[in-house]
Image (cartoon, rainbow, N blue to C red; front, top):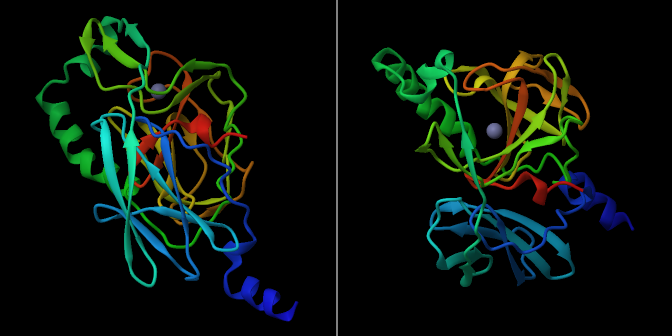
Amino acid sequence: MKKINLLLLLFPSMILANIPIKNTAIPGGIAVIDFETKYTNPKAFYRTVPLYVQHIKNNHWQALLGIPLMEKLGKKSITVKDFSSRIFEIEVKKYAYKEQYITLKDKNKKYINPINIHMKRIKNERPVLSKPRMTFSAQRLSNGMFTRPIDGITTGMFGVKRFYNGAARRPHTGLDYAGSIGTAVKAPANGKVLLTGNYFFNGNTIFLDHGQGLISVYIHLNKNLVKQGQLVKQGEIIGTVGKSGRATGPHLHWGIFLNGAAVNPTLLLQ
Ligand SMILES: [Zn+2]
């Protein structure tokens, strides 16, 4: 008994439940790599990128790989490092996401074909926005079981191939929820505020770090009510719904990143 308590004290993350995730080895999905080890702190990598690792029970562990929407199909190698180094293979299978055609009005033209002055801003913001996405903090901050950030209906599904005024754009990397301006946005899981700011496409934005490369993002906000470095609890209000940035109307765009890859948030919803 004493031994267990000591372990919990040393590794508080051990008291957290695991993500009860199904293996969805498709672009935008999460591949589950089961492995056994007696090692107490195994690590897993895709190329050199560290992966989310969770202890199931006894010698059973899992590594979770977030698969980017634009990832090539086929076999991928995951390296598990414990006493030695082992390779596990997974296969990314095809999934046909739907297509969506969006008409942006004249006043939104600057977002369709941004002119030079905007291009400079967009270019400058790119590395600022990709950095939080790739963050890996060793400490797990949540149990990975998310609740919805707002109650609105889903107006934009994950992975949908989008066309703005007929021109193909990147697939939709999050979920859109309808909501009137000022609707409270709640943290769907415990985390730490990684970055807040106002950006050209995203408008007012908040990134939360949930640990082990699991990151969430909230965009087009009206108000941001948290500060960088602040710890937030599941259910805590972090901001309000708005239509800042490239938004056709007030809504919340919610995104989840795992090892830098945008994955379907519904995979983590209970
Ligand atoms: Zn969206």
